[in-house]
View 1: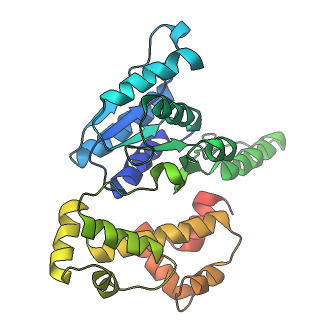
View 2: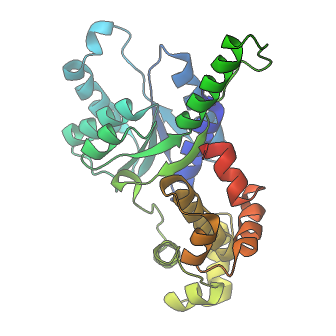
Length: 289
């Protein structure tokens, strides 16, 4: 079973981190898992103080074909306030939304930023622009399912039959590679932090990259993002660590060296403050490596 609650929450958080204050969800009304993801996505956005607009899928199945529904989605997209962050229930739906944006004459990601689910690389990379997507730990679930089946075939009693497929991180591509922040200085500061996510930087480095005092920039960060400059540096660095844990076979020591940490103990303490576990534990628990 997929952890749809965590999926919906991660989708909203990804768009919130990019500064969006308006949200939309496009799914399949007939599928409970799609409705659940949308429900949690909307709840997470509402807790941050922002509304979510839901796509009303046509009831008639005859209108749900590619050629009939795309113009309907396009008409709905035109009615939404811009810029807006949109979550699609999966990558297939995300592809539909990207194509509908073209029909509607809307720019992705500047007017509509889109994130899907499953990280189906064939779909995501063939989208124009490429689709950002939530990565699920399906490989680990597959190993767990095989181990459970092996025990059952050996005559052992299976005590845990529910296997959870959990989201691990967002594979960021062009469809959400944007900052929906009107404050040019804060946007520039965040861009600087992201560009230097693989190096050790301090708050003063960020302050020096923009034409504001530290006090003013800190105040704007907290007002717009609800977190400090230091919090944003740590969050971005931890996301970089997670990406390297998932996409490479590098050891924790090699990742620490590549990102400028003094040793494994240092990167472990840094990561634990944000995620509550060490990088190695995270890799084993969420990524199945």
